[in-house]
Length: 312
Image: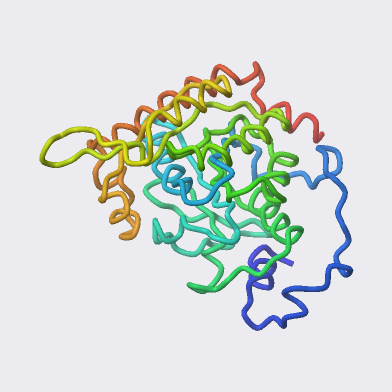
């Protein structure tokens, strides 16, 4: 069965309640996968991707998707070939922020990802109707992630960014177990209620031996038009504190700017519409630091080379 058919079957609104939500007893509990037991990506999928970087927080509402997309665009501006995989199966945002069109089917089971401003992009939202809920149990959501990794023709990329969903569950574990993650970028807002959950993501990545490349503090402050003063609405220095705790650099403090929401809702992200703004400059800074950190953590053969060697 080709990729389109598999995804359409999962998200078809015609499925019955039994098919969408089978009983717990009907779903066998899968064993914990390792590199030897998980399905290897097919040739043409990840074989020419140099580095995979996860963007996560363990928490919803901190701006992971916005950071992922604008970081991808900033990395491209640095001369890198970049792809972006929307791994948030239950609340995908990338298609809305880009208006990317439905991918094309290639020969066999591979599909060609959509193109947005030169960024290769895939999201579940491209295969479902607007507003349609993704009623999937954990193993089914994990299978979609496997297909995004193994049946999308990513081609030659320097970086494939993975926009993670909230939490530390099935999707995150599936990615860590079957994908050669080169590192993770953590996104937080300054207040402690956000840091509580992001610390759990730090623990997850450390347990899975995924290097933490740095911390982004989003919605860090607001600059008043009349006084040009920084107003710290959600407290101050939470990202700096978290970075110190996990031994990683603070990549940037991104200010609150109403144009960020407007640009994202219009399908033209901030880095596209206002690259020279304070927010745009922050993403350039993040991209430069991520490149330096990833190179520092990369082995002599690269994480992906070692990963493919293990599969062979």
